[in-house]
Image (tube, rainbow over all chains, first blue to last red; front, side, top):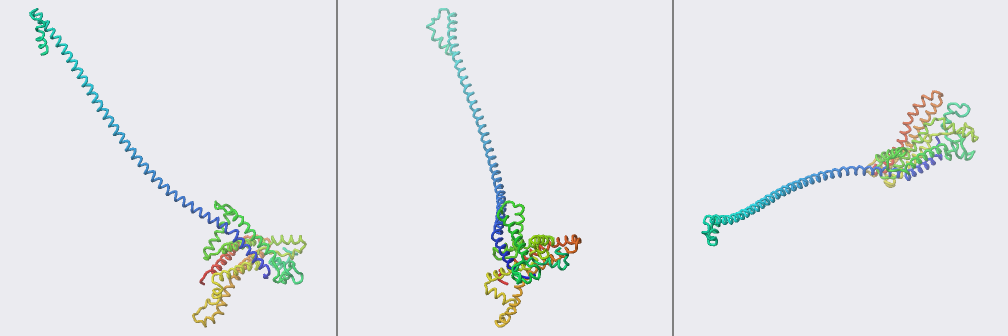
Length: 156
Length: 288
C-alpha cells in the first residue's frame, strides 16, 4: 500500500501504451471501419440506382414494343391495301384483254362473213347467168348482159 | 501455502505483499525479504510483479490489436478482427456520445484504459495461490527462502498502478483545460466559481473560498478514479484470499464469487474509461 517508484513506472508504461495505441492501432482500425461504412453506403446507393434504371428500361422497352406493334399494324394494312390494288388491277387487265380478244374475234368473223358474201355473190352471179343462159339459151349475149347481171348481183 | 504452516494473518499478509526491488538503507539495491524491509525502502523501490504483469498485459493487448490493425480489411471481418472492431466501435461510440471536442487522443486513450484495466483485473480470476506458488517454486530454485518470495498477480490491487493511470489522466485534464481556456481561464475557473458577485471587493474576499472548493473538486478526480478501482479490486482479491483459506469448502464459494467478480472487473474498467472521457470532456468545454 506504499507509494513508490512503481507509480512513475506505471505512468510511463501507460503513456507509452496510449501513444502506441493512438499511433498504430486506432487509425488503421478506424480507417477500415469508415471505408467499410462507405463501401456499404455506396453499395446501397448503387442498388437503388440500379432499381431506378431497371424501371426506366422497362418503360422504354414497353414503349418500343408498342411502337413496333403499331408499325407492324401499319405495314400489314398497307400490304393488304396493295394486294387489293393488285387484284383489282389484274381483274381490270383481264377484262380489257378479254374484250380486246372478243373484239378481234368479232372483226375476224365479220371479215369472214364479208368474204363469204363476196364469194356467194360471185357465185350467185355466175349461177344466175348460167340459169338465165339455160333459160334463154343463146338469146342473151354474155358480154352484152354481163353488166346487168353484175348490177343485179351487187344488189344481193 | 507459504512456509511452515503460517497463521491466517501471515497467509493474508503474504498474499498482499508485492515483490519489491529497491534501495534498502542497509542492504542496498535488493529484493525486499519482508513487508517491513519493503517499507524501509521508501520511495526508491519498485514493485516488480506489478510492473511485470501490467506491462506484459499491456503488450498483449497492443499486440492483438496491432495484429488486426495491420491487416484490417474493408471486406467481411472474421474472428479476431470482429472482436477488435466491436471494441473499437464500442469505445468510439462512448467517446462520441460524451466528448464533444475534437481530439485524436481521447478515443485511443479510452480504448487503452478499458482494455488494459480489463486485462489487469482479469488476473483476479486466476486462483489466488496458483501464480504466487509458482513464483515461490521458481524463487526456491534460485536459492531464495520461499517464505520471503512475495508475488502479487493483479496489478490493479496495487495502488501505484491505479494512481499511475489516474495521475496521467489528471495531467491530461490540466493540459486540456489550459489549452482550451488559457492559463487565465483555467485560474479564473478555479477562483471565480461557484460563488460569484458583481461587487469587486466581495469577489476578492470570495477567491480563497472558491479556490478551496474548486481545488478539492479538481483533486478529487484523480484520487477517486484511482481509489475506486483499487478499492474494488483489492476487496475482491481479499475475499478470494479469504475463500481460499477455508479448505475444501472454497470450491462452492469460489465459483459464485468469481462469476460475480466478472461483472466487477468489466464494470470497473468501464467506469474508469467513462469517467476519464467525462473529465476530459469537461476540461475541453468552454463554459463551466
